Image (cartoon, rainbow over all chains, first blue to last red; front, top):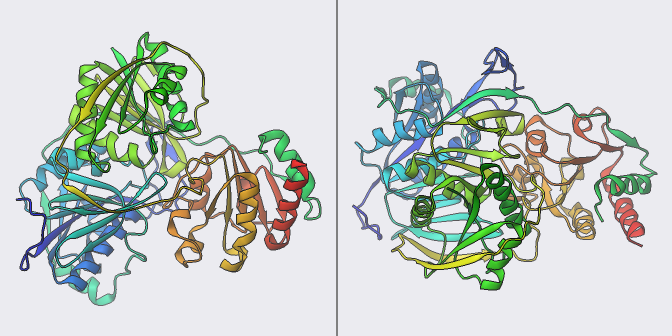
Length: 259
Length: 318
Protein backbone atom coordinates (compact mmCIF):
# COMPACT_ATOMS: atom_id res chain seq x y z
CA UNK A 1 0.00 0.00 0.00
CA UNK A 2 2.63 2.44 -1.08
CA UNK A 3 1.41 5.66 -2.62
CA UNK A 4 3.87 8.32 -3.59
CA UNK A 5 1.30 10.98 -4.12
CA UNK A 6 -1.26 11.76 -1.47
CA UNK A 7 -4.63 11.55 -3.10
CA UNK A 8 -7.08 14.23 -2.16
CA UNK A 9 -9.10 12.30 0.35
CA UNK A 10 -6.44 10.22 1.97
CA UNK A 11 -6.37 10.78 5.66
CA UNK A 12 -3.45 9.48 7.64
CA UNK A 13 -2.83 7.76 10.92
CA UNK A 14 0.31 8.53 12.88
CA UNK A 15 1.89 6.46 15.61
CA UNK A 16 4.46 8.06 17.90
CA UNK A 17 6.64 5.61 19.83
CA UNK A 18 7.51 7.02 23.21
CA UNK A 19 10.06 6.05 25.76
CA UNK A 20 9.78 6.70 29.48
CA UNK A 21 13.08 8.18 30.72
CA UNK A 22 14.53 9.95 33.77
CA UNK A 23 14.14 13.74 33.71
CA UNK A 24 17.17 15.29 31.98
CA UNK A 25 18.17 17.08 35.20
CA UNK A 26 18.57 13.73 36.99
CA UNK A 27 21.86 13.10 38.73
CA UNK A 28 22.72 9.57 37.68
CA UNK A 29 23.47 6.98 40.39
CA UNK A 30 23.86 3.22 40.36
CA UNK A 31 23.32 0.51 42.96
CA UNK A 32 24.02 -3.20 43.57
CA UNK A 33 27.73 -2.89 42.83
CA UNK A 34 27.07 -0.58 39.89
CA UNK A 35 25.01 -3.16 38.04
CA UNK A 36 21.65 -1.36 38.22
CA UNK A 37 20.44 2.19 37.66
CA UNK A 38 19.22 3.63 40.95
CA UNK A 39 15.67 4.86 40.31
CA UNK A 40 15.17 6.31 43.75
CA UNK A 41 13.81 9.84 43.62
CA UNK A 42 13.86 9.89 39.81
CA UNK A 43 11.19 11.88 37.97
CA UNK A 44 10.07 10.18 34.77
CA UNK A 45 9.26 12.04 31.60
CA UNK A 46 8.50 11.42 27.94
CA UNK A 47 11.86 11.12 26.19
CA UNK A 48 12.51 14.70 24.93
CA UNK A 49 12.85 13.75 21.24
CA UNK A 50 9.71 11.58 21.34
CA UNK A 51 7.88 14.50 22.91
CA UNK A 52 8.93 16.74 20.02
CA UNK A 53 7.76 14.05 17.55
CA UNK A 54 4.37 13.99 19.25
CA UNK A 55 4.22 17.78 19.20
CA UNK A 56 4.84 17.80 15.44
CA UNK A 57 2.20 15.10 14.88
CA UNK A 58 -0.33 17.23 16.79
CA UNK A 59 0.59 20.32 14.77
CA UNK A 60 0.10 18.39 11.54
CA UNK A 61 -3.29 17.13 12.66
CA UNK A 62 -4.41 20.65 13.51
CA UNK A 63 -2.97 22.38 10.46
CA UNK A 64 -3.37 20.03 7.52
CA UNK A 65 -6.64 18.23 8.05
CA UNK A 66 -4.91 15.18 6.61
CA UNK A 67 -4.31 13.39 9.90
CA UNK A 68 -7.28 11.70 11.47
CA UNK A 69 -5.69 9.81 14.33
CA UNK A 70 -2.59 10.00 16.51
CA UNK A 71 -1.70 7.10 18.74
CA UNK A 72 1.25 6.66 21.09
CA UNK A 73 2.88 3.40 22.07
CA UNK A 74 5.33 2.53 24.79
CA UNK A 75 7.04 -0.69 25.81
CA UNK A 76 7.03 -0.71 29.57
CA UNK A 77 5.56 -1.81 32.83
CA UNK A 78 2.45 -0.34 34.44
CA UNK A 79 4.38 2.57 36.00
CA UNK A 80 4.91 4.10 32.53
CA UNK A 81 1.18 4.72 32.19
CA UNK A 82 1.65 8.14 33.80
CA UNK A 83 3.82 9.08 30.82
CA UNK A 84 1.23 7.74 28.36
CA UNK A 85 -1.51 9.72 30.14
CA UNK A 86 0.57 12.83 29.68
CA UNK A 87 0.77 12.12 25.94
CA UNK A 88 -3.03 11.75 25.88
CA UNK A 89 -3.38 14.96 27.87
CA UNK A 90 -1.47 17.00 25.28
CA UNK A 91 -3.66 15.62 22.49
CA UNK A 92 -2.89 12.02 21.41
CA UNK A 93 -6.10 10.09 20.68
CA UNK A 94 -5.15 6.68 21.95
CA UNK A 95 -2.32 5.06 23.89
CA UNK A 96 -0.95 1.54 23.86
CA UNK A 97 1.29 0.04 26.49
CA UNK A 98 3.06 -3.11 25.45
CA UNK A 99 3.40 -4.85 28.76
CA UNK A 100 7.09 -5.71 28.94
CA UNK A 101 10.12 -4.39 30.75
CA UNK A 102 12.48 -2.97 28.09
CA UNK A 103 15.66 -5.08 27.97
CA UNK A 104 17.54 -3.48 25.06
CA UNK A 105 16.84 -1.49 21.88
CA UNK A 106 16.32 -4.66 19.86
CA UNK A 107 13.73 -6.18 22.18
CA UNK A 108 11.86 -2.85 22.32
CA UNK A 109 11.94 -2.52 18.52
CA UNK A 110 10.77 -6.14 18.17
CA UNK A 111 7.83 -5.59 20.52
CA UNK A 112 6.84 -2.42 18.68
CA UNK A 113 7.19 -4.14 15.30
CA UNK A 114 4.99 -7.07 16.34
CA UNK A 115 2.31 -4.60 17.44
CA UNK A 116 2.57 -2.27 14.42
CA UNK A 117 2.37 -5.14 11.91
CA UNK A 118 -1.21 -5.71 13.01
CA UNK A 119 -2.11 -2.02 12.54
CA UNK A 120 -2.24 0.31 9.57
CA UNK A 121 -0.26 3.42 10.42
CA UNK A 122 0.97 5.60 7.59
CA UNK A 123 3.62 7.47 9.54
CA UNK A 124 5.54 6.10 12.49
CA UNK A 125 7.67 8.53 14.46
CA UNK A 126 10.38 7.88 17.03
CA UNK A 127 12.91 10.15 18.68
CA UNK A 128 16.47 9.79 17.40
CA UNK A 129 17.61 8.42 20.74
CA UNK A 130 16.42 8.03 24.28
CA UNK A 131 18.14 10.08 26.94
CA UNK A 132 18.85 7.00 29.08
CA UNK A 133 20.73 4.48 26.95
CA UNK A 134 21.35 6.80 23.96
CA UNK A 135 21.85 3.93 21.60
CA UNK A 136 19.94 5.80 18.87
CA UNK A 137 18.90 2.39 17.63
CA UNK A 138 15.22 1.64 18.24
CA UNK A 139 13.85 3.64 15.28
CA UNK A 140 16.19 2.13 12.70
CA UNK A 141 15.70 -1.38 14.05
CA UNK A 142 11.94 -0.93 14.01
CA UNK A 143 11.99 0.20 10.37
CA UNK A 144 14.12 -2.78 9.36
CA UNK A 145 11.85 -5.23 11.20
CA UNK A 146 8.84 -3.69 9.46
CA UNK A 147 10.67 -3.62 6.12
CA UNK A 148 9.87 0.09 5.84
CA UNK A 149 11.90 3.08 4.74
CA UNK A 150 13.46 5.12 7.56
CA UNK A 151 14.54 8.72 7.49
CA UNK A 152 16.92 9.48 10.32
CA UNK A 153 17.95 12.80 11.92
CA UNK A 154 14.77 14.37 10.57
CA UNK A 155 14.42 17.98 11.63
CA UNK A 156 11.27 18.88 9.70
CA UNK A 157 8.14 17.07 8.55
CA UNK A 158 5.39 18.53 6.41
CA UNK A 159 2.30 17.06 4.81
CA UNK A 160 1.72 19.16 1.72
CA UNK A 161 -1.16 19.05 -0.74
CA UNK A 162 0.37 16.27 -2.79
CA UNK A 163 3.43 14.96 -0.97
CA UNK A 164 5.11 14.37 2.35
CA UNK A 165 8.35 16.27 2.77
CA UNK A 166 11.03 15.63 5.36
CA UNK A 167 14.16 17.59 6.09
CA UNK A 168 17.11 15.72 7.47
CA UNK A 169 20.50 16.73 8.72
CA UNK A 170 23.37 14.98 6.98
CA UNK A 171 27.08 15.17 7.75
CA UNK A 172 27.78 18.77 6.82
CA UNK A 173 24.43 19.93 5.54
CA UNK A 174 20.73 19.40 5.11
CA UNK A 175 18.57 17.54 2.64
CA UNK A 176 14.92 17.87 1.74
CA UNK A 177 13.27 14.62 0.71
CA UNK A 178 9.91 13.63 -0.62
CA UNK A 179 8.86 10.29 0.87
CA UNK A 180 6.21 7.63 0.33
CA UNK A 181 4.13 6.15 3.11
CA UNK A 182 4.39 4.13 5.17
CA UNK A 183 7.72 5.16 6.66
CA UNK A 184 9.49 5.55 9.98
CA UNK A 185 10.59 9.10 10.74
CA UNK A 186 13.41 9.24 13.29
CA UNK A 187 13.38 12.77 14.56
CA UNK A 188 15.73 15.16 16.29
CA UNK A 189 15.66 18.71 17.55
CA UNK A 190 14.04 21.17 15.18
CA UNK A 191 11.10 18.93 14.24
CA UNK A 192 8.97 21.05 16.58
CA UNK A 193 9.94 23.96 18.78
CA UNK A 194 8.42 23.70 22.24
CA UNK A 195 6.79 20.60 23.66
CA UNK A 196 3.26 21.18 24.94
CA UNK A 197 2.32 21.40 28.56
CA UNK A 198 -0.93 19.61 29.41
CA UNK A 199 -3.77 21.94 30.39
CA UNK A 200 -6.32 20.99 33.03
CA UNK A 201 -8.94 20.32 30.36
CA UNK A 202 -6.54 18.02 28.54
CA UNK A 203 -5.75 16.14 31.74
CA UNK A 204 -9.46 15.62 32.42
CA UNK A 205 -10.08 14.45 28.86
CA UNK A 206 -7.08 12.12 28.98
CA UNK A 207 -8.77 10.12 31.73
CA UNK A 208 -11.52 9.14 29.32
CA UNK A 209 -9.25 8.39 26.36
CA UNK A 210 -8.44 4.74 25.64
CA UNK A 211 -5.22 3.31 27.06
CA UNK A 212 -4.91 -0.27 25.93
CA UNK A 213 -2.52 -2.86 27.31
CA UNK A 214 -0.99 -5.16 24.71
CA UNK A 215 0.47 -8.55 25.56
CA UNK A 216 4.15 -8.69 24.59
CA UNK A 217 5.46 -10.95 21.84
CA UNK A 218 8.30 -11.95 24.17
CA UNK A 219 11.26 -10.68 22.10
CA UNK A 220 14.72 -11.60 23.33
CA UNK A 221 17.45 -8.96 23.70
CA UNK A 222 20.74 -9.04 21.78
CA UNK A 223 22.86 -7.14 24.28
CA UNK A 224 23.07 -6.81 28.01
CA UNK A 225 24.33 -3.98 30.25
CA UNK A 226 26.34 -5.73 32.92
CA UNK A 227 27.97 -2.85 34.77
CA UNK A 228 27.98 0.93 34.92
CA UNK A 229 30.51 3.53 35.92
CA UNK A 230 30.60 7.28 36.33
CA UNK A 231 33.13 9.33 34.35
CA UNK A 232 36.37 10.02 36.24
CA UNK A 233 36.24 13.07 38.51
CA UNK A 234 37.73 16.20 37.01
CA UNK A 235 40.72 17.81 38.69
CA UNK A 236 40.59 21.40 39.87
CA UNK A 237 40.00 24.17 37.39
CA UNK A 238 43.07 26.36 36.93
CA UNK A 239 41.85 29.93 37.35
CA UNK A 240 43.29 33.00 35.61
CA UNK A 241 42.74 36.69 36.10
CA UNK A 242 40.67 38.40 33.40
CA UNK A 243 43.73 40.58 32.76
CA UNK A 244 45.90 37.54 32.19
CA UNK A 245 44.25 35.93 29.17
CA UNK A 246 47.63 35.59 27.40
CA UNK A 247 48.83 33.19 30.07
CA UNK A 248 45.71 31.04 29.81
CA UNK A 249 46.02 30.71 26.03
CA UNK A 250 49.74 29.95 26.36
CA UNK A 251 49.15 27.24 28.99
CA UNK A 252 46.25 25.81 27.03
CA UNK A 253 48.39 25.55 23.93
CA UNK A 254 51.18 23.89 25.90
CA UNK A 255 48.81 21.17 27.11
CA UNK A 256 46.34 20.79 24.29
CA UNK A 257 48.36 21.99 21.24
CA UNK A 258 45.59 24.11 19.84
CA UNK A 259 47.67 26.02 17.32
CA UNK B 1 36.49 -13.99 9.47
CA UNK B 2 36.98 -10.28 8.99
CA UNK B 3 36.25 -6.91 10.53
CA UNK B 4 34.03 -4.80 8.27
CA UNK B 5 34.19 -1.02 8.42
CA UNK B 6 31.78 1.35 6.69
CA UNK B 7 33.78 4.23 5.26
CA UNK B 8 31.65 7.21 4.34
CA UNK B 9 32.93 9.71 1.79
CA UNK B 10 32.26 13.39 1.27
CA UNK B 11 32.24 14.35 -2.41
CA UNK B 12 34.56 11.45 -3.08
CA UNK B 13 36.95 12.28 -0.25
CA UNK B 14 37.58 10.60 3.07
CA UNK B 15 38.12 12.60 6.25
CA UNK B 16 40.38 12.26 9.23
CA UNK B 17 37.58 10.49 11.10
CA UNK B 18 37.42 7.87 8.34
CA UNK B 19 41.07 7.05 8.99
CA UNK B 20 40.43 7.03 12.73
CA UNK B 21 37.67 4.51 12.13
CA UNK B 22 39.83 2.27 9.92
CA UNK B 23 42.66 2.46 12.50
CA UNK B 24 40.15 1.36 15.14
CA UNK B 25 38.86 -1.51 12.98
CA UNK B 26 42.46 -2.58 12.40
CA UNK B 27 43.19 -2.64 16.13
CA UNK B 28 40.20 -4.96 16.62
CA UNK B 29 41.17 -7.16 13.67
CA UNK B 30 44.68 -7.40 15.08
CA UNK B 31 43.36 -8.77 18.36
CA UNK B 32 41.09 -11.21 16.57
CA UNK B 33 43.87 -12.33 14.22
CA UNK B 34 41.97 -11.28 11.14
CA UNK B 35 41.91 -8.54 8.50
CA UNK B 36 39.91 -5.40 7.76
CA UNK B 37 37.54 -5.04 4.83
CA UNK B 38 36.29 -1.53 4.14
CA UNK B 39 33.07 -0.85 2.29
CA UNK B 40 32.70 2.39 0.35
CA UNK B 41 29.55 3.42 -1.50
CA UNK B 42 29.37 6.14 -4.15
CA UNK B 43 31.83 7.84 -6.45
CA UNK B 44 35.35 7.63 -5.05
CA UNK B 45 38.57 7.47 -7.11
CA UNK B 46 40.85 4.45 -6.67
CA UNK B 47 43.67 6.69 -5.45
CA UNK B 48 41.44 7.82 -2.59
CA UNK B 49 40.24 4.27 -1.83
CA UNK B 50 43.86 3.11 -1.63
CA UNK B 51 44.47 5.56 1.22
CA UNK B 52 42.42 3.22 3.42
CA UNK B 53 45.27 0.71 3.08
CA UNK B 54 47.58 3.09 4.97
CA UNK B 55 45.50 2.49 8.08
CA UNK B 56 45.15 -1.25 7.72
CA UNK B 57 42.31 -2.03 5.31
CA UNK B 58 43.45 -5.10 3.35
CA UNK B 59 40.42 -5.07 1.09
CA UNK B 60 38.12 -2.31 -0.12
CA UNK B 61 34.73 -3.19 -1.53
CA UNK B 62 33.70 -0.26 -3.66
CA UNK B 63 30.09 -0.05 -4.78
CA UNK B 64 29.28 2.63 -7.29
CA UNK B 65 25.67 3.72 -7.35
CA UNK B 66 23.21 5.82 -9.25
CA UNK B 67 21.24 6.54 -6.06
CA UNK B 68 21.15 10.27 -5.50
CA UNK B 69 21.18 10.15 -1.73
CA UNK B 70 21.48 7.91 1.32
CA UNK B 71 18.62 5.41 1.24
CA UNK B 72 18.86 3.65 4.59
CA UNK B 73 16.89 0.62 3.46
CA UNK B 74 18.99 -0.08 0.37
CA UNK B 75 22.35 0.82 1.95
CA UNK B 76 21.73 -1.30 5.05
CA UNK B 77 20.80 -4.34 2.97
CA UNK B 78 23.96 -4.02 0.86
CA UNK B 79 26.20 -3.69 3.92
CA UNK B 80 24.46 -6.62 5.61
CA UNK B 81 24.96 -8.79 2.51
CA UNK B 82 28.62 -7.78 2.50
CA UNK B 83 28.99 -8.68 6.19
CA UNK B 84 27.66 -12.15 5.44
CA UNK B 85 29.82 -12.58 2.34
CA UNK B 86 32.94 -11.41 4.18
CA UNK B 87 32.07 -13.45 7.27
CA UNK B 88 32.51 -10.32 9.39
CA UNK B 89 32.52 -10.92 13.14
CA UNK B 90 32.65 -7.22 13.97
CA UNK B 91 31.13 -4.40 11.92
CA UNK B 92 32.25 -0.86 12.68
CA UNK B 93 30.46 2.41 11.94
CA UNK B 94 31.13 6.01 12.85
CA UNK B 95 28.68 7.24 15.51
CA UNK B 96 27.48 10.09 13.30
CA UNK B 97 24.25 10.79 11.40
CA UNK B 98 25.01 8.14 8.79
CA UNK B 99 26.15 5.52 11.29
CA UNK B 100 23.07 6.17 13.42
CA UNK B 101 20.90 5.74 10.34
CA UNK B 102 22.47 2.48 9.13
CA UNK B 103 23.92 0.49 12.03
CA UNK B 104 20.60 -0.20 13.82
CA UNK B 105 18.97 -1.43 10.59
CA UNK B 106 21.91 -3.76 10.05
CA UNK B 107 21.63 -4.97 13.63
CA UNK B 108 17.97 -5.90 13.23
CA UNK B 109 18.57 -7.45 9.82
CA UNK B 110 21.47 -9.65 10.98
CA UNK B 111 20.20 -10.16 14.55
CA UNK B 112 23.59 -8.82 15.58
CA UNK B 113 23.89 -6.94 18.87
CA UNK B 114 24.66 -3.23 18.56
CA UNK B 115 26.49 -0.82 20.85
CA UNK B 116 26.57 2.89 19.97
CA UNK B 117 28.48 5.71 21.66
CA UNK B 118 31.64 3.64 21.87
CA UNK B 119 34.85 5.48 22.82
CA UNK B 120 37.44 2.70 23.20
CA UNK B 121 38.44 -0.79 22.12
CA UNK B 122 36.48 -3.73 23.55
CA UNK B 123 37.44 -4.64 27.11
CA UNK B 124 37.31 -8.32 26.22
CA UNK B 125 36.51 -10.37 23.15
CA UNK B 126 35.19 -13.57 24.72
CA UNK B 127 32.74 -12.62 26.06
CA UNK B 128 32.57 -9.49 23.92
CA UNK B 129 32.32 -6.54 26.33
CA UNK B 130 32.57 -2.92 25.25
CA UNK B 131 32.08 0.41 27.02
CA UNK B 132 29.33 2.67 25.73
CA UNK B 133 28.15 6.11 26.80
CA UNK B 134 24.83 6.13 28.63
CA UNK B 135 22.63 8.81 30.16
CA UNK B 136 23.94 11.27 27.60
CA UNK B 137 27.52 11.05 28.77
CA UNK B 138 26.67 11.22 32.47
CA UNK B 139 27.88 7.59 32.78
CA UNK B 140 29.31 4.61 30.91
CA UNK B 141 27.77 1.17 30.60
CA UNK B 142 29.57 -2.08 29.90
CA UNK B 143 27.68 -3.78 27.11
CA UNK B 144 27.96 -7.51 26.59
CA UNK B 145 27.10 -8.55 23.04
CA UNK B 146 26.12 -12.19 22.85
CA UNK B 147 25.34 -12.59 19.14
CA UNK B 148 27.92 -14.02 16.69
CA UNK B 149 28.20 -10.75 14.82
CA UNK B 150 28.78 -7.55 16.73
CA UNK B 151 28.04 -4.04 15.49
CA UNK B 152 29.61 -0.98 17.07
CA UNK B 153 29.52 2.76 16.40
CA UNK B 154 32.61 4.72 17.40
CA UNK B 155 32.42 8.32 18.51
CA UNK B 156 34.54 10.75 16.48
CA UNK B 157 37.78 12.01 18.08
CA UNK B 158 37.96 9.10 20.51
CA UNK B 159 40.58 6.91 18.85
CA UNK B 160 43.98 8.02 17.54
CA UNK B 161 44.86 7.51 13.90
CA UNK B 162 47.51 4.84 13.47
CA UNK B 163 49.27 4.00 10.25
CA UNK B 164 49.40 0.32 9.40
CA UNK B 165 50.27 0.22 5.70
CA UNK B 166 49.10 -2.92 3.95
CA UNK B 167 48.70 -3.90 0.32
CA UNK B 168 45.10 -3.05 -0.46
CA UNK B 169 42.89 -4.89 -2.96
CA UNK B 170 40.03 -2.84 -4.42
CA UNK B 171 37.04 -4.89 -5.56
CA UNK B 172 34.35 -3.23 -7.62
CA UNK B 173 30.64 -3.72 -7.51
CA UNK B 174 27.51 -1.67 -7.78
CA UNK B 175 24.61 -0.78 -5.58
CA UNK B 176 21.28 -0.83 -7.29
CA UNK B 177 17.82 -0.26 -6.03
CA UNK B 178 14.62 1.64 -6.56
CA UNK B 179 14.57 4.29 -3.86
CA UNK B 180 11.33 5.42 -2.26
CA UNK B 181 13.01 8.74 -1.47
CA UNK B 182 13.10 11.66 -3.84
CA UNK B 183 15.77 14.25 -3.22
CA UNK B 184 14.26 17.69 -3.60
CA UNK B 185 17.00 19.88 -2.28
CA UNK B 186 20.48 19.71 -0.78
CA UNK B 187 22.09 22.43 1.22
CA UNK B 188 25.71 21.58 1.92
CA UNK B 189 27.73 23.60 4.34
CA UNK B 190 31.23 23.45 2.98
CA UNK B 191 32.79 26.55 4.47
CA UNK B 192 32.23 25.62 8.10
CA UNK B 193 33.78 22.95 10.29
CA UNK B 194 31.23 20.35 11.33
CA UNK B 195 30.54 20.61 15.04
CA UNK B 196 30.83 16.90 15.78
CA UNK B 197 34.11 16.63 13.79
CA UNK B 198 35.80 19.66 15.30
CA UNK B 199 39.06 19.49 17.26
CA UNK B 200 38.22 22.79 18.91
CA UNK B 201 34.75 24.22 19.62
CA UNK B 202 34.01 27.80 20.66
CA UNK B 203 30.57 27.90 22.21
CA UNK B 204 28.44 30.72 23.58
CA UNK B 205 25.59 30.94 26.08
CA UNK B 206 23.18 33.48 27.50
CA UNK B 207 26.11 35.30 29.08
CA UNK B 208 26.87 36.64 25.59
CA UNK B 209 23.85 38.90 26.23
CA UNK B 210 22.80 39.33 22.60
CA UNK B 211 23.07 37.49 19.27
CA UNK B 212 24.78 40.64 18.00
CA UNK B 213 27.81 39.76 20.10
CA UNK B 214 28.52 36.53 18.21
CA UNK B 215 31.09 38.24 15.99
CA UNK B 216 33.69 37.70 18.71
CA UNK B 217 32.93 33.98 18.92
CA UNK B 218 33.16 33.63 15.16
CA UNK B 219 36.44 35.51 15.04
CA UNK B 220 37.97 33.39 17.79
CA UNK B 221 36.70 30.22 16.10
CA UNK B 222 38.19 31.30 12.80
CA UNK B 223 41.59 32.00 14.39
CA UNK B 224 41.57 28.57 16.04
CA UNK B 225 40.12 26.67 13.09
CA UNK B 226 37.26 25.80 15.39
CA UNK B 227 33.54 25.10 14.99
CA UNK B 228 30.97 27.28 16.72
CA UNK B 229 28.39 25.95 19.16
CA UNK B 230 25.88 27.27 21.65
CA UNK B 231 23.85 26.38 24.72
CA UNK B 232 20.21 25.34 24.66
CA UNK B 233 18.60 28.64 25.75
CA UNK B 234 20.51 30.41 22.99
CA UNK B 235 19.16 28.06 20.31
CA UNK B 236 15.67 27.97 21.84
CA UNK B 237 15.51 31.76 21.68
CA UNK B 238 16.58 31.68 18.05
CA UNK B 239 19.86 33.52 18.65
CA UNK B 240 21.61 30.65 16.85
CA UNK B 241 20.38 27.79 14.62
CA UNK B 242 19.42 24.61 16.46
CA UNK B 243 22.18 22.69 14.63
CA UNK B 244 24.63 24.50 16.88
CA UNK B 245 22.98 23.41 20.13
CA UNK B 246 25.47 21.42 22.19
CA UNK B 247 24.11 19.33 25.05
CA UNK B 248 22.03 16.36 25.99
CA UNK B 249 19.17 17.05 23.57
CA UNK B 250 21.36 18.72 20.97
CA UNK B 251 24.76 17.53 19.83
CA UNK B 252 27.02 15.47 22.05
CA UNK B 253 30.59 16.47 21.24
CA UNK B 254 34.06 15.21 22.09
CA UNK B 255 36.60 17.77 20.87
CA UNK B 256 40.16 18.21 22.05
CA UNK B 257 39.25 21.64 23.44
CA UNK B 258 35.80 23.03 24.27
CA UNK B 259 35.66 26.74 25.04
CA UNK B 260 32.49 27.67 26.95
CA UNK B 261 31.80 31.41 26.88
CA UNK B 262 29.01 32.73 29.06
CA UNK B 263 27.65 29.22 29.59
CA UNK B 264 26.78 28.48 33.21
CA UNK B 265 26.85 24.71 32.70
CA UNK B 266 23.42 23.18 33.25
CA UNK B 267 23.63 19.43 33.85
CA UNK B 268 22.30 18.76 30.33
CA UNK B 269 25.00 20.94 28.77
CA UNK B 270 27.76 19.31 30.77
CA UNK B 271 26.49 15.88 29.70
CA UNK B 272 26.94 16.93 26.08
CA UNK B 273 30.56 18.08 26.51
CA UNK B 274 31.87 15.53 29.00
CA UNK B 275 33.86 13.75 26.30
CA UNK B 276 36.02 16.86 25.70
CA UNK B 277 39.71 16.48 26.56
CA UNK B 278 40.08 20.06 27.81
CA UNK B 279 37.39 22.54 28.79
CA UNK B 280 37.96 26.28 29.05
CA UNK B 281 35.27 28.35 30.77
CA UNK B 282 34.68 32.08 30.99
CA UNK B 283 31.77 33.19 33.14
CA UNK B 284 31.01 36.19 35.31
CA UNK B 285 29.68 33.97 38.10
CA UNK B 286 32.47 32.22 39.96
CA UNK B 287 29.93 29.74 41.35
CA UNK B 288 28.81 28.64 37.87
CA UNK B 289 28.82 24.81 37.65
CA UNK B 290 30.81 24.95 34.40
CA UNK B 291 33.94 25.60 36.55
CA UNK B 292 33.47 22.17 38.20
CA UNK B 293 34.23 20.46 34.90
CA UNK B 294 36.57 23.04 33.34
CA UNK B 295 40.36 22.72 33.27
CA UNK B 296 41.07 26.42 32.62
CA UNK B 297 38.83 29.24 33.82
CA UNK B 298 38.37 32.97 33.98
CA UNK B 299 35.80 34.81 36.06
CA UNK B 300 34.83 37.83 34.04
CA UNK B 301 32.59 39.39 31.41
CA UNK B 302 32.82 37.27 28.26
CA UNK B 303 32.37 40.20 25.94
CA UNK B 304 35.47 41.78 27.45
CA UNK B 305 37.48 38.56 27.61
CA UNK B 306 36.80 37.31 24.06
CA UNK B 307 38.72 40.12 22.27
CA UNK B 308 41.65 39.45 24.61
CA UNK B 309 41.51 35.77 23.70
CA UNK B 310 41.58 36.65 20.01
CA UNK B 311 44.56 38.90 20.63
CA UNK B 312 46.36 36.25 22.70
CA UNK B 313 45.87 33.63 19.97
CA UNK B 314 47.21 36.04 17.35
CA UNK B 315 50.21 36.86 19.52
CA UNK B 316 50.99 33.18 20.07
CA UNK B 317 50.71 32.46 16.37
CA UNK B 318 53.32 35.17 15.90
